[in-house]
Length: 106
Image (cartoon, rainbow, N blue to C red; front, side):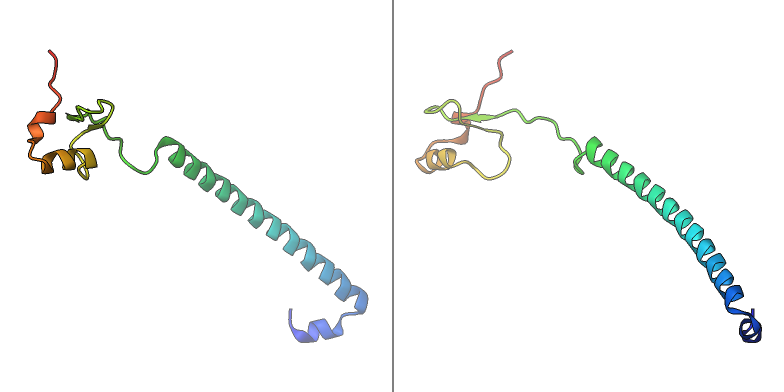
């Protein structure tokens, strides 16, 4: 529609055109909103499933302790990470690490 056609229209015709355009825009916007909401639900479902199924890390096996403090048997160390203070102190006093190794029972 060009400007001449709009200028030649009466106020009632222009108002009717306005209502028609508004109605079409409303239905188009609602359809687009529904589509976006459906996509958002799908994304939230995928994200929730991903978070529920894993913590983002691969599963590691449990590590069995290899060393035990003879003074406090509840203190153990698996040999991973930083050496515990009790073991570092014992090693510094001249003991060997094999003195604290946990023997496997057959």
